[in-house]
Length: 138
Ligand code: HEC
Image (cartoon, rainbow, N blue to C red):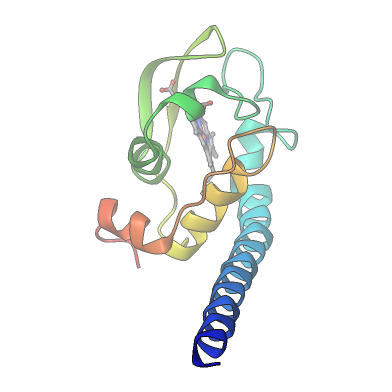
């Protein structure tokens, strides 16, 4: 009987934890969409397909898929310049650092949103991961 109770408690915990993280992700997706539309959309467009020769696509971006998450966090948070090849096309532009008004949680949310939209891989990003890389971010 004790074993059964322990098992039920265990299953209960697993269900609770996974639903909590599903909730966290839903909240990140909601906040991420707001940040995306407010900021990233100007360049990368509403459909994530980028614009002409100036702004590379995020939609199904092979760069986003192949680069380590830490690199993507660093580039989006601290900015990126120089040549970059995305889905076979070369870009050489400037992405400014993410404005300071966006918190680490905002940054984690928008990155999670991008990773889970436009046909991308489904990776998630936490505020702790952001703070580890961008140490001054609140
Ligand atoms: C002012 C325009 C601008 C804004 C705003 C902007 N980007 Fe970018 N982004 C660029 C440019 C230009 C590049 C390519 C930089 C280079 O040539 O090295 C780039 C590159 C990238 C890349 C790597 C290349 C790729 O297409 O996979 C990612 C990922 C990215 N941006 C995500 C974001 C996210 C997320 C936001 C919002 C938080 C954002 N960008 C906001 C202009 C912008």
